[in-house]
Length: 310
Ligand SMILES: Nc1ncnc2c1ncn2[C@@H]1O[C@H](COP(=O)(O)OP(=O)(O)OP(=O)(O)O)[C@@H](O)[C@H]1O
Ligand SMILES: [Mg+2]
Image (cartoon, rainbow, N blue to C red; front, side, top):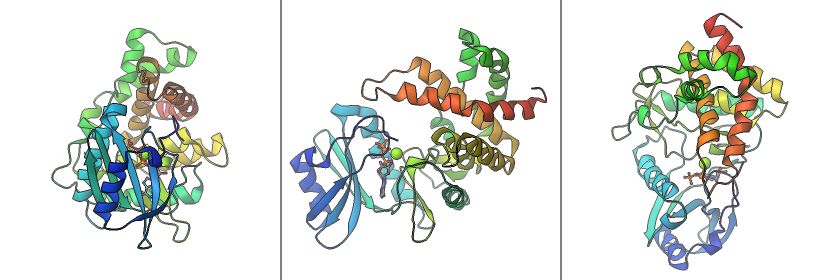
């Protein structure tokens, strides 16, 4: 999934490209632009003269200051992660004028397509491996990395817009309430699990989690709940019903608050689709609306389970 064509690495300023090669101590022999992810900045596979392939992404404050901050933050986060966390390793961070570039080890299998049962299992394992770790000092509490979880409350306040919302928004708002408390914890969480932020190596079947800018200290089940929501939001290769069933089963293995998390996360997409415009990501509102629609059967089921009424 990509919102906007990413810039080409070849169009990044020459001094930035030169600084990257310099920091890596070699010459870039060739590169391939990548198209997944959220940011309009370039992301590429760099093939180096010494035989390595590495990942680079770059952003300018003049293009999108928020993404520049995220690259900067991710760079710091990667240095805090223990070796046993399934993450790329940071190789270099370089700045040139308003630009920043982050170079990491290459993770094979970053396809960003639909979920399969195998990729769900691999990513779920990677999430569990991650959350076994205590969050390193230096990571912020997850309350600072979660936004708009009062989405359903705001829908109730501004008026439901269709029959589903008239039937369910009230209960959804009640279930999301208190999220600051029930998401708190001291486990390491990635907090942005989506198919396009994972790579499943076809050779080993194991997953690497990518894009660590939102990593935080929180409850250990948080990434699995986010995975469940993304199985439905991104979709499963066997279709929408399979996605909902896989997600529901995964949530059943977690504490009840994980179901509340999925309800609240859907409310976040719902309110953001209606209220947040972004000129540099013109299709993001459509993407969010489609997620909310796709998640309705799952969220209906979770609300029914949690409140005891259909
Ligand atoms: N280490 C890596 N190895 C191989 N491919 C990667 C790696 N990291 C990311 N990718 C691929 O590049 C895409 C973009 O990378 P990433 O998710 O880090 O950036 P982004 O979503 O644009 O994030 P940001 O908000 O930081 O700009 C990913 O969707 C994935 O397909
Ligand atoms: Mg990403």
